[in-house]
Image 1: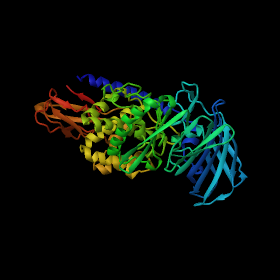
Image 2: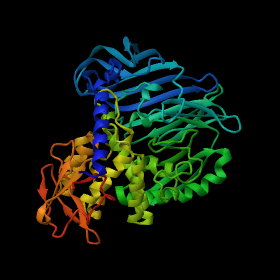
Image 3: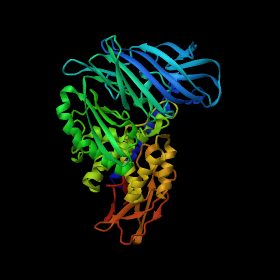
Image 4: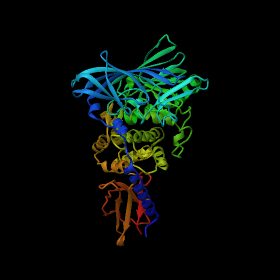
Length: 552
């Protein structure tokens, strides 16, 4: 007979069969394809620069303004696609003083030019628009404008649009594969309020109509969903950090009422985070634009160089530790997690939303590495092991390509566990650190896909980890290591896995002894450890997230 783990495996397989059936039945719309697919009408031009100029009327919850597109043609064309949610009205598209015809389909806008734009040509056009933007009901988990008021009754507003798309509030080429090289963000708000956006503050201008415009310039490439407006009765204080690439400016924008508690809390969390992450990942990727925390009513978002912060000046995740180990309450989760995205998500960005697992898995893992740096490796390992309690294993981490569809929420905890297993397989912590730093150097300010990341780790480690990533990213089930014990003390094992060539090395030992790596495959192979029996076998399930099945 087989032990109880066999039952666990078969139940898991049944659940997987059901989830795969549901996935097969998922139907995507024409609107999904228009948003997610790189058609010739999107690949024909490369975005170089935006000037977003928007007026926000908080009382009416209404926006109006324009966005200038500066681009370079990659092919000859007479028509291109931009994106803007269809609840927002386009007043006109202007090209060299001429109003251009356009057509709308779902959230896509097709613009026709009066003469061909030639390959290599640099040019500009401007989209003028207005309307009531989508209001987020539960930011940041849904998208749009988050209209709130602070305790003094003053407007307190933020944007958050990851996943849903930046075109929920401003016109752009809304695909992660094409990050704009630089950008001027001009947000006009009623006098008495302040807008804080990404990049460097360029100044404010009283418009003479009861509004003040705040200009912010982003000098580094930025993905669209990171572009943010944060409006409120803010006060500002600043600091600096001596980092690997020089002096990094630290700017903090918080509600007036919270300045007293914000300063000591940020002092205790930001520099320790930067020291840990520059150690593990390399220099902060946006020295030119500085580092900011901006207080928001919602919990937080990784808006590049302007991290949205709403964790109420406490450690943990609203005071809690999801790992159950106690290590998660020794630091502010939102500061560490969202700032971790500056390396994974903002510096390295996935080409397609389907590969959002790259952003979230590495950033989840960064929490463990923060603990590792400040409290030791064992503490970091305990934290990442504790996070397994939140894993469901129902659907793959990877989403569906070309339809703006990300994968399972397991991309966070399961993704962090996966990277920690790969670290264990590589079995050289300094090499692993150089791989993480190398990723951020090799793909500096770049967009990537699954193959880029997995291929780089395999190449630099000298070990082919592609089948490990494929099993944990592309399939919901975790693999099971099955053992057989025959006569005369002979022991055998094999992997039960979805990935046809799955061959992850794993550590086992005789109880009380030293762990040794073995190299199982999906074929039954002998184990060369004299004296190993079913009763004294121990598998390193602390570092390896696997099932274990022992045959009687």
